Amino acid sequence: MILKKILILVDNYVWVLYNNNGFCIIIDPGLSEPIIQEIKKRKWFPIAILLTHNHIDHTGGVKDIIKYFPNITVFGPNETKKYGVNKIVKQGDKITILDKIFYVIGTPGHTLGHVSYYSNPYIFCGDTIFSGGCGRVYKNKHLEMYNSIKMISSLPDNTILCCSHEYTLSNLKFSMFFLPNDYFIKSYFKIIKMKINIGKSSLPSYIFFEKKINLFLRTNENCVKKSLGLENSCSSFEVFLNLRLKKDFWS
Ligand SMILES: [Fe+2]
Ligand SMILES: [Fe+2]
Image (cartoon, rainbow, N blue to C red; front, side, top):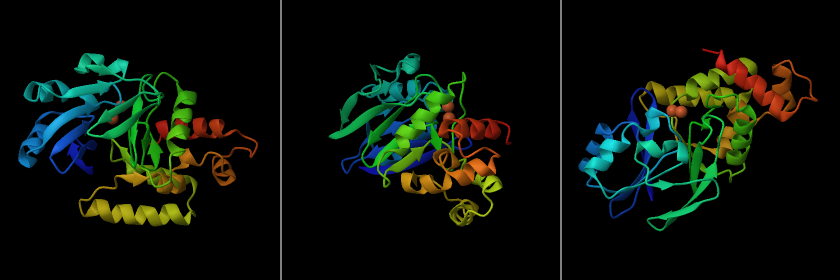
């Protein structure tokens, strides 16, 4: 399957997987118009929509897309059911679409019912991990978010991380503030800055890169603890919590 992304709103990506016959799967369509246009332009046949969570920038396009293409199956967690979902999914489910298996991974934290979809080599993780950062945590579910990030980062290093927002540059600035001498983060920042300056995207990313540039995946490292003023004996979760709270007030 071939991966494509469609930029909508300011910084949201709608991900599409399509095959050589033009059948496609749409992930988190926050708007309908640009997606319907792309489907028509490419002569795709949409088969399914996958939803990660109930925020409108991920679900807002579903109702109009299914008016246009009524045979689409819409998969999503329980919290998305009012957005046109006809197949509720939960942690541990395995769904087969176009001969590809999608594993549903419960990734609560950003919302209570957030799920991600893993279909080797892709993970569609919604607002759980962003390149260089992670999603905001609502309702104080920090431990859940920490565990969700751990789960995603335990996937193979070459997993392609399809996150939903282009926040990479600002996330890397946050990382560089705490680790100003980290060679990999600095180099990665330069590359991404060049890409963004010429109108390209920083995404998708890879788990391998995130383990190096994303402080939320490096919470067990003493250099991260030190940069936050924490003792080496601090738990990985305490570091995560500290980082997330700092990021909440960052910009
Ligand atoms: Fe969200
Ligand atoms: Fe979002």
